[in-house]
Amino acid sequence: MANKTAANGHGGFPWKHLIGFLLSIVLTLVALWVALETDLSLTWILIIIFGFAFLQAALQLLMFMHLTENSTSTKLTGRVQVGNILFAAFVAIVIVVGSVWVMTAGHAKHDKHDEPKTENHGEHGGEEKSEEHGSH
Amino acid sequence: MAHAETHDPNTPLEYRSETGRLNILGFWIFLGAEVALFATLFATYMVLTHRIADGPALGELFEVKSLLIQTFLLLTSSFTCGLAVHEMRRHNVKGLMLWMIITLGLGLGFLYFEIQEFLHFIHEGANIGTSAAWSGFFVLVGTHGAHVTFGIFWVTMVLIQVAKRGLTPATSAKVFITSLYWHFLDVVWIFIFTAVYLMGMVMHHG
Image (tube, rainbow over all chains, first blue to last red; front, side, top):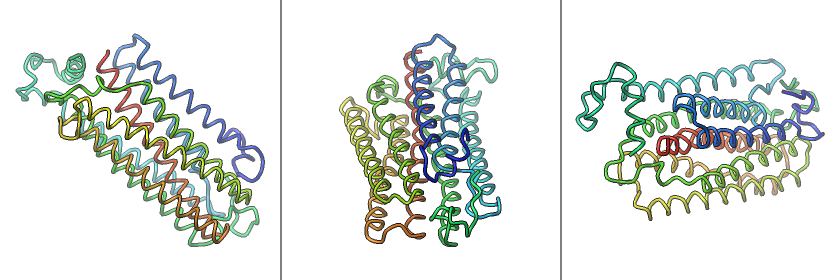
């Protein structure tokens, strides 16, 4: 993206790959640091590390995999590839977030294994519960 | 946004034949289905992650050192795989071979450390049958490891074909497709790194 001639991949130094690689290393290490060395709340840690994960996935797709590249002179194939991957990401988020939400948000009240905190207020129940379990 | 013209001599070799173009487009669509497959495994893992029964908690056994070694081996292999395709597009068969063989070596290194880690977990009393959480862990991470294993065989066979037949529209499309597959495995690992290891350690220590 930064350098369109390098993006075409004929000759020259592979800047696009190098930049993608260095940014991936930085994102990996910063995510690790945020997760283990900061005093942020669990919610913020999760927002930050998942934000970095999606950024790094986008880097791989754009810098390494040539996602937006067209194999014909029409722009069609690039669009199909981008549309397909965006739809796949949407499906993945719905499956993961939907499953976690259904299985934790309040419905777990009826689970006898989770006794003490069952009187929780609405949707915060699931979250507190996970923290509680984690500390065991 | 590469402006690839079908008859332009600058068109990468892998896009020159109709079959090559369609196979590459088809493989992108297959990767969309792989995303859905891994999403179901991630969902299962994340729902069951606290169901540890009498076994150890996940975050209790995760180690930063082993995690970083695996992550950097796979990340670097994704980079060298990208360089291999870069060399292929310069019609440099030797460069392609060299970077791809380095990619395979890094992939094997990743598998070695992953298997060591699994053996360590089993030694510490966490196997696939220990608890729902560990079942989810081994199925998710193991499916990724199985993909890497398959990728190593696949890339090896494509490289043998390139060595025998040289770079043609057919063989270069195969190399390009295996490169997409390999990069995709790193994309999945990014989410295993985040959702399994980082989250597991945060939940345990935090």
